Amino acid sequence: MTLTDTPAARIETLAAAQKARFRTGATRPESFRRTMLRRLDAALVNWEDRLCEALWQDLHKSHEEAILTELSIIRGEIHQHLRHLHEWMRPERRPTPLKLLPARSRIVAEPLGQALIVAPWNYPVQLLLNPLVGAISAGCTALLKPSPHTPHVARVIEGLIAEIFDEEYVAVVQGGREVNTQLFAMRWDVIFFTGSPTLGRVVMRAAAEHLTPVILELGGKSPCMVDRGADLRIAARRIAWGKTINAGQTCVAPDYLLLHSTLRDSFVEEYARAIKQLHGENPRRSPHYARMVDTRAYERVAGYLSQGRILFGGETDAAERYIAPTLLGDVDPESPVMQEEIFGPVLPVLTFETTDEAVEFVSAREKPLALYYFGPEETGRKVLSRTSSGGACLNDTVTHIANDRLPFGGVGNSGMGRYHGRESFEAFSHRRSVLEVPERFDLPFRYPPYRFFRWVKKIL
Picture 1: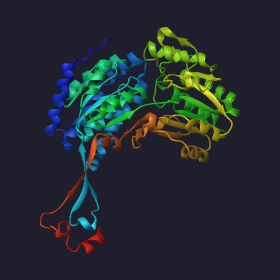
Picture 2: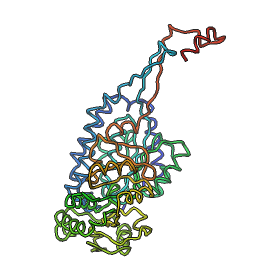
Picture 3: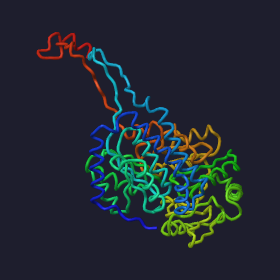
């Protein structure tokens, strides 16, 4: 299936219409925001089968995985916003210093305005519509740009959005690099982009022309440490699960494994056992094991298999874009598989002798989007205190993003800004400082010729 690029003139027309709609103030009332959130929630129910079918066509993603990793997360986000929107919108009172009395001080959350939301292909429903929840909740308009690499999903979402929203409020545009270039060159009030660090730099350079604020949800090489004292059966099962969701095409999937040297052989055995429990003797036949999104992605990830010794897995099928869950040993830390984000089911394994050595290895590299540690909790907390990452789990992988009460975002090379829950509302809001000064009190000491300044100085 091939998508047709939205014409440049059409994009300009939509952007102008959304700017005009926002300026009317129609998107600001709490009642309007609630109505739109409920409308999106109902549409996710009504379009569930069509969305799941599109995810299967584009990514071979099972119905269960589609619900678990895409639709349920968006609906959970909507429900949290409906519960707390009134509280988040309420002006926040702040103390006023003596020198400014009898004024009153408060912070008002106001919508930033026109939002551009650009999503990747790996979770093409969740990573487009979850930020939209924040934009709606904050009172913004939004132009949505799905990934052309998942065309079935992009077409279904376009239909869903057109059915429930006026295009002057929320609309979808389609296309590849040329459309992205046009969108990023335009002036927006906020850009929310999810993708690679390389593309994140492109977005940030373009946004700088208009001083547009950006939320960049990027990626990187998220390390996973397995230390002495870890329960290897649990560790292997949770790592295998986190690495094989969506066939490893997950921004917070474990990207490489740091394994204590005494545990390597035992871990490989447990990992093989865990994969069989999750996906059967042959993952290729599993209804819950996805495929590489396209031929280019398949060839890139399959090319990593020659950069080490296969400890487990390694089977491929180009016709199906299938790559088996694979552990790769004897890997050179300077090889491409250890320099590039893998975004596939291949997991390089490196060993360490001491926890300090593992921490030093991680800290010498770019700050990752996630960090995972398996072992004694006390040691894990020390590891976290000496490293930096967007998020982290002790004795688990990936599940921190399922808690919509925790902010999600990167740091350094893995991104900037955060969302989920209240942070989604704030990502699309401006916290405006307001000082209200009554007219009937006009204290003279602030005006020239500054009488009694010797006394005034004491309260400044």
